[in-house]
Structures are given as C-alpha cells and as structure tokens.
Amino acid sequence: KASIAATIKINGYLVKKEEGESLDDVIAKINQMNIGIYASKVDIATGTQALYLRTEDYGKAAKLVIESTAQDSDAFGVTNSDLGSFIGENVKIAIRSVGGSSSETYEGDGTVVRINDIGKAWNGLVLDVKAPLSAHAQIFVGEGRDFKLHVGPNKDQTINISIKRMDAASLDIADLDLTSSESAEEAISKIDEAIKTVSRERSKVGAYVNRLEHSVQYLQIEEENTVAADSMIRDADIAKESTELVKWQILQQSGMAMLAQANARQQVALQLLG
Image (tube, rainbow, N blue to C red):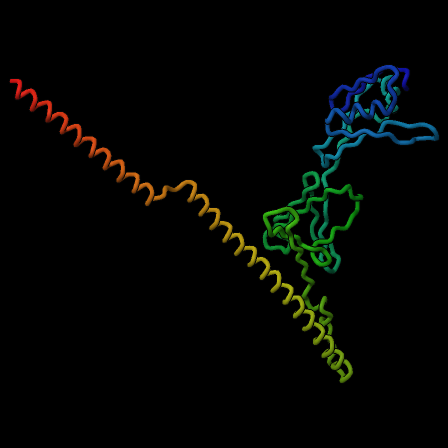
C-alpha cells in the first residue's frame, strides 16, 4: 500500500517504507541492502501483487526471519502467515547399488555431503549440489558425465575425461550362452565387440596419460625457468663481484702506500730541521 508508511525486519535488518513508496521501491531498497536476502514480487491474485523474499543459503544454518506488526506487514504486501522464522533443511542422499537396493543414507551440512566410509567404493566422495533441486532428484556420478581436469595456467585450459564402465554386464558378456552352436557364435561376436570396446577405452586412457605427462613436463620446465629467473634476480654474479673486490683491494692498498710515503717525507723534513 503506497499510502502507508511502515517498517519490517528481515533477519534483524530494519526496512523502512516511506509514505508514497511503491512495492517496486521497497524491492529495490531491500536488494540494495546486500544482506543475502533477495526481494521480488509475485502475483497472488488478479491485479494483486505481494512481496516475495528468498535466500540462496542452504541447510539448517540458513534462516529467513520476518518480523513486523500486522498493519505494517500488510503495507508490505505480506500476510501474518508469512511472519516468523523459516529454517532450511540439510541435503540427504541415499546411495543405491547397481541392483537398486538401498545401501546407506547420508545427511550433509547445507548442500555438501562427504562420504568417507573406509573400504567402500565411494570412499572420499564429496557431493556439493548448488542448484535448488527438487526433494527427490537423481545425481549421476561416473558414466555419462565428464571429469574435468585443469591442465594449464590460464582460465578454461581444461580437459574432459570420460571412461565407460568396463564390467561384464556393461560389456554385455555377463550371461554368455555356450550350450549350442548358434549361441556360441553369438557369444564370440559379443566377446569381439567387448574387446574392441576395451581397446578403444584403453587408447583413450593412453591419450589422457600422454596429455597429463605433457602437462607435468611443461610444469617442470616452467619451474626450472622460474628458479633460474629468481636466481638471476637474487643471486650474486660471482665473476663480476670478484672483479669489483680486486679493484677495491688494489685501490685500498695504493691509498695506504701513498699515505705511508707522505708520512715518511714528513719525518725526513723534521730530521733535517732538527
């Protein structure tokens, strides 16, 4: 309501609505506060709009607390049911085996789930889901998804690594039938295709290894060049410094010899006067 001046608190931050300010003015004011809460408007009925608040924080540590009086909240387009404290939930995942049976359920902190069960296939797995997924979402890890490695010193110098599953079921040779001549022929064909698939994947792995070895060699050369440049800046030039040392030693000895001769002449003059 543009004609009403009101106040509201969002996560403890006071937002003042001056008389005559529209909903768009309030939205702009909240977004300019940089408090981690983002405002927009939503249509709740024909010709009626309300304030919509959201946060990009996740998990039980994330809170959205809205405090106001009934009259003031109405001026912001917020109903009494919108007042109060709203707490998020931590992500939960259930890892299932290939057969589909559930193995373990894990709860994370916000969006991060760390799995460090010693001896299990997913030991050390870390999932960090940023997108606001639905309550039940599938996340695929492995086949069908590339593993990205950064291999250069600059932005976007990466390579994608993707290796297919190589178990018998994935190669279609888990249930070979050798009970008849026809099935044995089919089994030979499946085995030949499996060998070709394994060979293709091995060649891909070889290419990945060569690329990574090239990166390692490049980094070793860069390290040597960096050390050499640092040495040129920091270390002394022994030949140059030795020449300078000899020069100053000669000048020092010459000066001392001349000073000694000057003192000797004064003594001779004193002896003649005496």
